[in-house]
Each structure stands twice: as C-alpha cells, then as structure tokens.
Length: 138
Image (cartoon, rainbow, N blue to C red; front, side):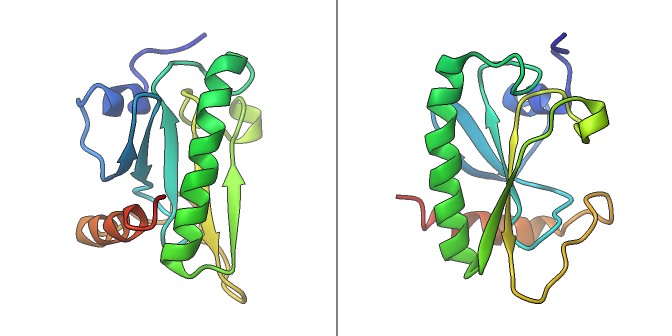
C-alpha cells in the first residue's frame, strides 16, 4: 500500500527541501543527498505509486523518457564512463523509500561506488552538480 507521508511525497509537496535538477508535469529530478557516485540523481514520478509493481503502464510510459534524458545528460555533464539505472521493488530487494523512483548513477573506470548510507553530500556541491547536469538536458 502506498504511504502518502514518505520522504519523496513530502519533497514533491515542498515539505522537505531538495536540490532540483529538472521538473516537468510528470516528474521531479533531484540530487541524491547520499550519493554512491559523484552526480547521482533521482527521478521521482509525481503520480504516486509504491514502486514499479503497482505503477500504471501509462505513468511508466511518461517516466521512462525522462529517465533516459537524465541518464544522457548526467553521463555527458559528469564525463562518466557509464551509467547505472537502479530501481528497487520492496524491502527485500533494497527499496527503502516506498514511492517509485529511479536512480541515475554515473560510473567511472576503476572507481568503486560508495555505500548509499555512507555520508551526506555537501549542499553546495549538490547545487553545483545539479546545475551542471541541468545544462546538458536536451
């Protein structure tokens, strides 16, 4: 069941601050505050669903082009060697926030990813990275 007070629902309602990269009628893209890689961002659909398993196909058809657009912009802006797209469904699969969202994680040859809960990123650095990624969105 969808919980309306999850952290992403609160961010979408403006109750919790975030560092925005992009927004349209269907999604908000923000920087992850505990990045596993420099430039790690999140795509949060505005239409509420717990995860991919209960999302409507119509909503997914609106979100996936945004995921692709952000992945391309992030790879270019961060001069990354690759991009990981992650999406978790239910607690046993690693989902910790029960609102559908997609991680866009830049990867770099020879560099290991951090653990998601290692540390909070510097807010000014997140703002700088958000502007850099946003500048590459086509």
